[in-house]
Image (tube, rainbow, N blue to C red; front, side):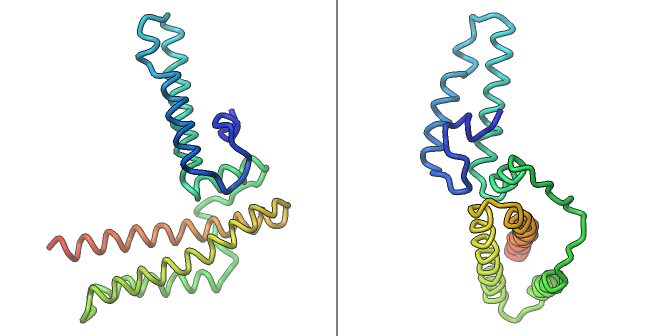
Length: 175
């Protein structure tokens, strides 16, 4: 089952999230297990399976990175394993610099400012890669899809760094 078809939306990276949410609610109401309380065991099982499929589709399509991954997979792009190394050495160096910057925040004279600066840098760099990926996905050709796949991997690193910043912030201010 193609999630785009399931939700009746165009096969595109850019989706109307409010339409997606409304369709999700409509679909879930139609297959809600309560509606099948007096149905056969098989019909109840099918309703639960359909509900799970709708949930999976919704979670995939509402999250931009998951949506990109799904769309590229539908296009036949083989996504590199997360553990596969990058050939972009400048990106790897930048990741090391950002990780060092995060490690130094703890020892900063002004932790609030250091955290805010790190978050700003991560957000800006994430946005640059995100917009590149969006354009590459929208171009929809083999070369651009491959480039989008690489940017998706980079965005995953930025996403993880943002989670690290959140955890760091919690640990610093929970004390």
